Image (cartoon, rainbow, N blue to C red; front, side):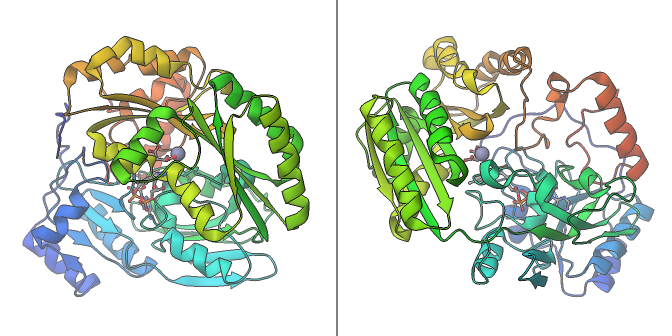
Length: 475
Ligand code: FAD
Ligand code: MLT
Ligand code: ZN
């Protein structure tokens, strides 16, 4: 583990005692984990840059059990860290000190699925990939997909308001989540688990918890709108000579592919070198400065193939694209997607990763990457850019052999100030968690920050839910 040192002090929460463990054992018999080996995996985040020191992990199965646990913790002033699949990118999913880890791993039941409306209601601990399989067997798809699908939980996805690879087509979870059940810090069960498409009765409270990163309540169940499964899916993986061509190819495919366009992802040549080197994947196209992955999803194969072929003919003949390959069969589709989805895995094998997840005006999406390469010179091992171009979301990642405070100083606040000047967002889809809690004000005015703090105080007056996360430390 390469670890940075953070200037953070433990808040005056109680320390878990033997009596507390006995009380938890009464609430969830046999599901109170204190084995240090098991705890190790839950105390360290996916990027292996944040490590907590929790001594206990709780595995409730029902919302009532979560409510019991939180009521108890609230009375005892014990801090709690909700945890799903622990794939979060900002250190929000692991404790900072000795917070109790409340895992949703055993809350993994589908509650209902309606095959006319496509509404899925399930517990928060269902793994995204398993839900995908479940709804696909019934002719639907999950409205979100991401590289972490094999581990992340739907509750974690909602808690982080995850974007991912289907955002361009199906939009944000703020639109596709129809209802939530949430347990508040004092143990109150807030049942807003409806499945209505339209409901304007008062404030839409569920929205408050989408993207709240475990700081306002524990999401225990989710109702989500699943779209019908597209019957024809194509993926084109293309090489582009420059970023201007990546942008023009995007405009061209929006025009020519229209309603069947379902993803437009990009990666630079450095990313390709990393996935081929660290993961032994093979590039399907000639070496190029940039690569784009375009997915179409529709209902009639011939129609989509014709549109795609017209588009490819145009971008190839105009020189926007220099090489490309197309897939329709499942195996090749997956192999092409892997080149893009597994970049974060390749990066984490490259060394210590400084990860930035920025929303920027699409036209300027890549400008910061060459700028940083020049600024950092040989201090960085790699500076790479990739991401969800169709959503204006750049993943800017820098690697070095080991954590270097000097490199961090060269990156921050430079990256945040640059982003703020473009009126961008310093966290497009990963959230703020622990690592980015201090940078919220680059993207939100003081009035918004104050209101967030008031909401936190209202919903969690003792601050027991995921302390040290999302909002900056109060003076
Ligand atoms: P965790 O990591 O366990 O938790 C994340 C946060 O949510 C923490 O603050 C935690 O306290 C809180 N939380 C978890 N469960 C609950 C709950 N039930 N109630 C309240 N709070 C809860 N993100 C994207 O947006 N787009 C991507 O394309 C994307 N790709 C990824 C690819 C990889 C390989 C990896 C490792 C991560 C990726 N992510 C992506 C990051 C993303 O945030 C997570 O993968 C996912 O949404 C988190 O789900 P999780 O169950 O692992 O949550
Ligand atoms: C992605 O789009 O690959 C994810 O958000 C993960 C990452 O940014 O590394
Ligand atoms: Zn992403």
